[in-house]
Amino acid sequence: MLPPQRLLPPNSTVYVGCVGKDKFAESLQAAATKDGLAVEYLVDADTPTGRCALLITGQDRSLVTDLQAANKYQVSHLDEPRVKAAMEKARYFYVEGFFLTVSLESILKLAQHAAETNKVFSMNLSAPFLAQFFGKQMDATAPYWDYIFGNETEAVAWAESQGHKTKDLREIALLLANLPKKNTRRLRHVLITHGAEATLLAVEGQREVSQVRSFPVQPVPAAEIDDTNGAGDAFVGGFLSQLIQGRVTSECIEAGHYLAGQVIRLAGAQYPRKIDLSLMPKA
Image 1: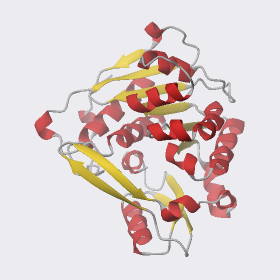
Image 2: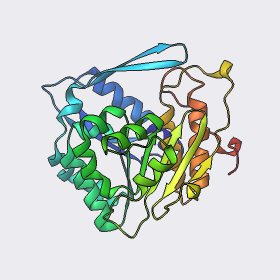
Image 3: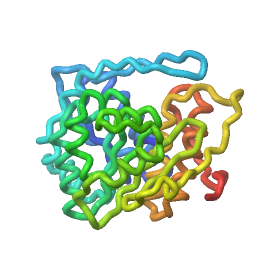
């Protein structure tokens, strides 16, 4: 959640998860605090904090995770006074798809709260294996998606897991957009990124591929690309940072493009210390 927090007032974003009682948890806390991110960690003193190794080859990357405490999150933590207060005060929720492997009950508790109170609930498809091996869990959350994000490979994996034969991203976006929905006061928005190719936007109620909008990505010169780690998260962060401030969807997408373009110029999932949206291309 660092990308949107860099574009918002301090402590306006609260990050919730599970960590161990060790130096890695302290590092996470320090990094979050430095960037104005409020955290409410569940601490499992018997399990180490999760870690992720990032392997870079040229401009490509691979991730190797050791989840440890990240797998130990409990839904009861959402009822802790400070966490419950943050949940009730929040107007927007974002859950990574990876959390489907940890605590579906926790996701549904947040999602149901959002639907009942007409708050915005968003998720990310996050990785192809989630649709392939955790499809039932993903399906359980789908009715609550107000915004669902994913890249081209994740979108195709979702379609295949649902038995759809198409690999056309516009068709898949429409399928996602028109899934059954709990909170009918909000239209579902589907955003599919595709690297340097255009981002697609489908909105609930659209039925024709011609209605799916396309938003070109401003190219980043190859010589300026360090690695692409964190680009997808940066897009979501930039998008949400503007959505929270009431911007129209096209401006949210351009903010996502801009921030992703900044991240891939840096080594690892880093973000510029100062983000100047005045430099962002206008929608």
